[in-house]
Length: 170
Image (cartoon, rainbow, N blue to C red; front, side, top):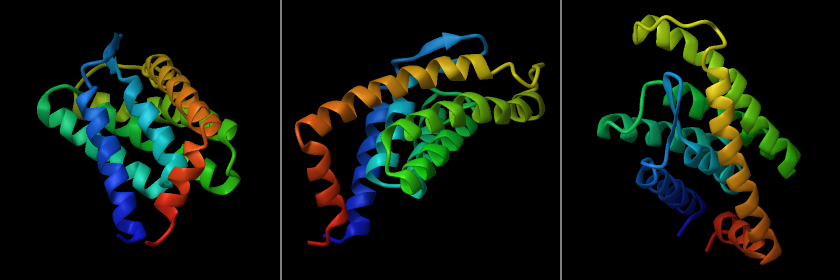
């Protein structure tokens, strides 16, 4: 199986996990906070890179919207966060900047990107920073879950194994 196929399979599995656990959400204000998506963003960043992370975030948001378990606000938050943390890991290969990039990307940038979507497409009245706090709460929870999982993977050498399996052609 080639490298691209392996990455596609891992992205699909993380997308399926995110969709399957989409019932685990925390309603805060007008948005539905979904920490599992942010966990998947960080895992995609570490295992797959920014492009697969953004694609997985888009697919998860699309499927959740089609199923009625998500809102349109899932798109900017999850995709901006996936891009930011994916780029952070790609260029630093360090976990702490990756976690920070997910929180800032989703919480601040994604929250601000949700504003035009909410006002122009969804017809809601909102201020520019309306979604920043709810998105920060959601992404902080998901990033903590991902940090715990990656810590366990690192201690048990699963992280090195997964990088080897995904990155090697065999």
